[in-house]
Amino acid sequence: MNKSILSVSVLALALALATASLLAACDKPAPAEPAQPAAASEPAAATPAPEAPTTPAAPSAPESAVPAFVGKVWQVKSSSAVAPGTRYSFLTDGTLVIEAEGGTPGYGKWTYENGALTMIEEGVSYPTDILKLDAGAFDIRSHNPGEPVTISMVPAEGAPLPASAPAQ
Image (cartoon, rainbow, N blue to C red; front, side, top):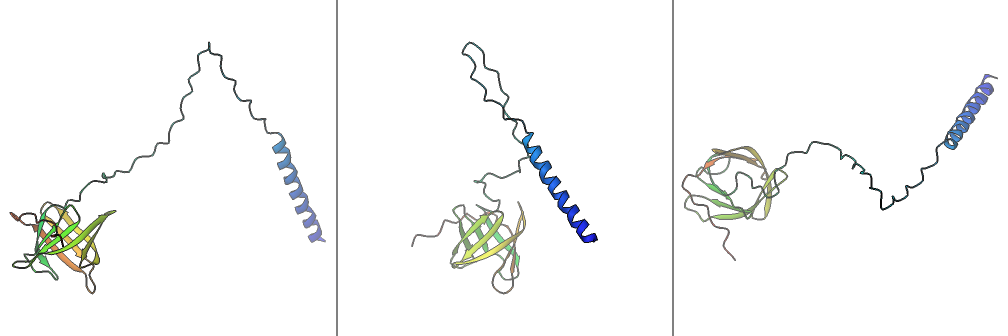
């Protein structure tokens, strides 16, 4: 018996809510009539423009900003796999030049997108973490196959910036 009273009460409540919703919709005011154009002799009232939302702009570097390691010759001070004295140059055109003492320069590419450095040697891309970068040091960790390679570099004083890869 209690179930039937409960069912009737729930049904009555649902019906009351539906009726109240319909009645509330009927009481909405009619939309305002569109404004008539003002006569030419009447000055138009200035309507203030809606304010744009104020959200603080995130600081961003210009898209043409060149990373601080570019356009310099860096010399390996210490490394887990690269000989000390080896020079790395990141040219502005995306060329990577690696020069070991007495050897022929090797040419690769580099990219820097969204704060991520990638070095490309012999067609293989290596994501590279920048561990430290300032005027006197450039420390990186290249994720080569096997163990990552750490390289600590300093500016190569007096070393000229090499040219891009020779045309082939």
